[in-house]
Length: 84
Image 1 (tube, rainbow, N blue to C red):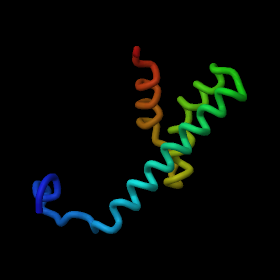
Image 2 (cartoon, helix red, strand yellow; image 1 turned 135 degrees about the vertical axis):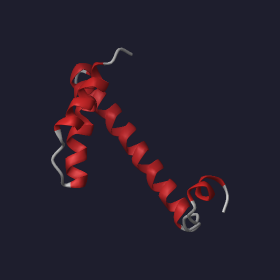
Image 3 (cartoon, rainbow, N blue to C red; image 1 turned 90 degrees about the vertical axis):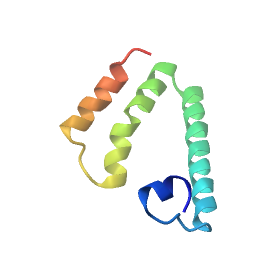
């Protein structure tokens, strides 16, 4: 065992699965960028930014089936209000 897996005392994940997960993550990221830029093209920038900032609040319950806790919503609000 080497790297992070050795520090945690567990075996490395299956080597055949890793490239597939990387490809899936890359495809999802590319799809996100494509849809984001199509959104900018179709609607105003303000609406697109609002939708992208609220996406974690909508995606989290959709993928997990759970209602976001107030602490999650507070954290999202603090993260969005932080100066950039």
